[in-house]
Image 1: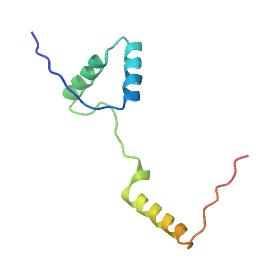
Image 2: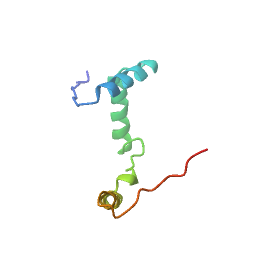
Image 3: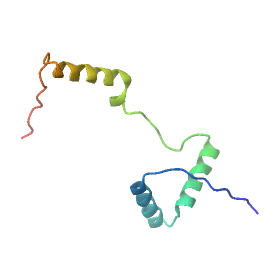
Image 4: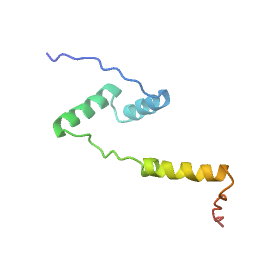
Length: 86
């Protein structure tokens, strides 16, 4: 007989409820979905989907944005006007 263990972690409540609903629509429990994920990680020795960082939040871009905001705040720059969509 296989022994089982509990795994506890925190998740946003709304996300949890959305995931629970989707799992139920697929005929799964959240436990079975996370077990499938764990088996895939162990089998493939990788996260089974691509994880990337949004380049917008890179250190260089954030520094550039802070400089622009500081220039606006000090009156040394003008606000960029986006073209209106018609």
